[in-house]
Every structure is written in C-alpha cells, then in structure tokens.
Image 1 (cartoon, rainbow, N blue to C red):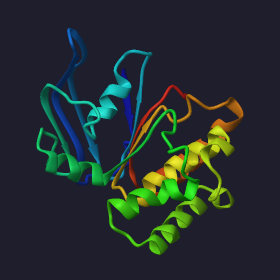
Image 2 (spheres, rainbow, N blue to C red):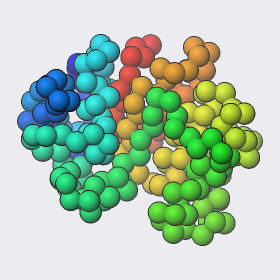
Image 3 (cartoon, one colour):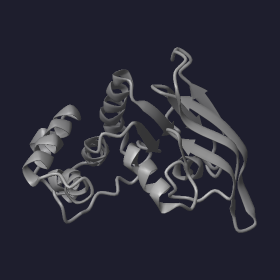
Image 4 (cartoon, rainbow, N blue to C red):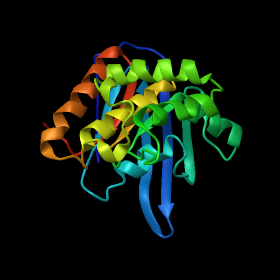
Length: 211
C-alpha cells in the first residue's frame, strides 16, 4: 500500500496525524506501524492491492474501525474510546462509501437533509435549501425527488457526495468511490471529485482507479 500526496500544498496545520498505528482483526495484523500526516487542503491517494488494508485505514480515521495501538489525531482531536471525541471527529469528516449507503426508502433530497435535521437541528426548509445547493453542485438537482432505486450508480454516488457535503466537513474520505460503478459512469463521479479537490478541501481517497 502506498500514498501519493499533493506536494504543492503550502506548509499549514496538520489535519490528520497517524503515529505508529496498528490494527488487528483477531490474529491478523492488517495495519502495521502506519505513520501519516495530511496537511489542510492536501489530497492524498491511498492505493494498493486488494486486502492490503486500504479501506481499513481510512475507516479508522473516523472510528468506523478501532485501532489497537498508536494514535490518530484529526484536526487536533485524538480518536480514543471517548465518545465525545468520536462525535467531534465525525462532525468534521465526511465519508463516501463504495456502495453508496443511501437510505432506499428516502428520496435523494431526504437522504441529504436527514443529518442536517436530526444532528444539526436545522429547520426542514433550511436543510432542503442546503441540500439543493449541493445537489446542484454535483449536477443532479433534477433527481432530488427520486429514490435511490430510480437512479443510476453514478447518480447515487453523487447523491452520497452531496449528502456528505451538506454537513460542511473539513475533511472528505472516499472509500473506493468508483469501484462499484459501470465504466461509463465513472467519469461523472471523478469530475465531481476533481471539482472538490480544486475547491481546497482536504481529501483522502482509497481507489484502484489509475486513469
């Protein structure tokens, strides 16, 4: 597994710091002595063969997986068993999954407003306004009232990206965002990711996409 960082980023604060981190699944030592620093605005690609621990690493950054040794600090907050710290980190980190993870019984708009209403306590009207802004940004505002099953894979992934952006994250994590897509749908998702990268947000991307 290897990482490629954007070396043009100026010297700024560290957004993610991983120091001597280890992760086991029972007796399987999946991550060994991982050290990584990501500065504000950097774009880092994590690539490697299947089973090398790429997705596990990125899932540890917002505590979807628990590391057993070493430290992970996200924007000044260390990830420990302290639930308050975990909540702080998750409020600042957006994540896009390989298989979209949209709620099938909610429309694209409702998927985007759910966390705004229930977590951020935003009014429904304000949440819908924010959601439409981000659906516009990912170029599918006309799909707002459709359910995930009515959308293509590429459209579903763009809804997932919009959903994460609605929470105004400081960091975006992408776990194989194009691997479940048909080839003709990959470009539309990559175009959105390129636009995000150009906006200056800090990004970590796990991918096998080398084009």
